Image 1 (cartoon, rainbow, N blue to C red):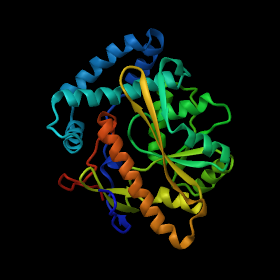
Image 2 (cartoon, rainbow, N blue to C red):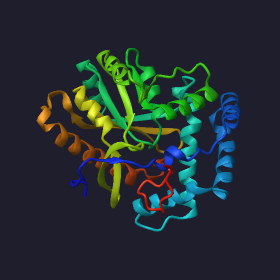
Image 3 (tube, one colour):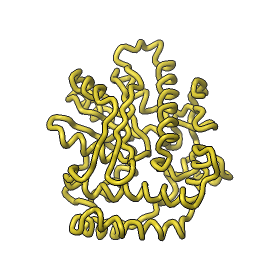
Image 4 (tube, rainbow, N blue to C red):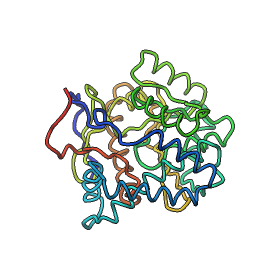
Length: 315
């Protein structure tokens, strides 16, 4: 059930994903990138599986967060094999960035559902928001945009995330273009509007929040979860349509790009703005839940998403 959402409230504690250091090694990523480009995807995936096996044997906190998610999404108790499959899907999406950022899309088989929604938005020419989540590979979507001349896909994300992504991209391909608008800056909204006015798609990940940020609590996979209001207010203020989009890893070299219509604020009256935003967030959570059930190993929010653990928040 997704037809009930709490009134907006302000989050006053820092989310765990903000304060928790990411596990990883940029030198290892850089070395893996060079190996992958030189030896090809099939050989480098054997090395990737060994790396995944290491994290599977020494999983750390991520394993607990994955298990909690899997207990919600499966109708059975998750197994160690489920953990390995989840870690492998995550690692594969990172690994495949090497090829996507080096213009090697031919290595992959892409299926696009509801492509006509993207085509219609392009023909309209006024720009649209692409609301996604930490699920699957957004790099597939950006690579798809680079394959079509005149189609721009720009990410808007929090400044800390932008720096982390920039470091990852530099490790994979120092020449990769970083089309990112850092949120929180004074001119961020002006940059977003400029890109939209030029007909660009502006991508936002709408499943994580910061401290001191308005959120709405929505029933998601059987329990209340907090979703940020800010991205939706931006879309409403700029009077743009919002599409859900996700690039899901389906095994082998296959990805499926899912597109769904979430909201169109182009004609929303000011008096109806708050209720329309709430309806859009509920629909977003519903689409996200459906995808999680159909492609559970693509969920990459490895933190206490439902606040089930004892509170140990940064102040």
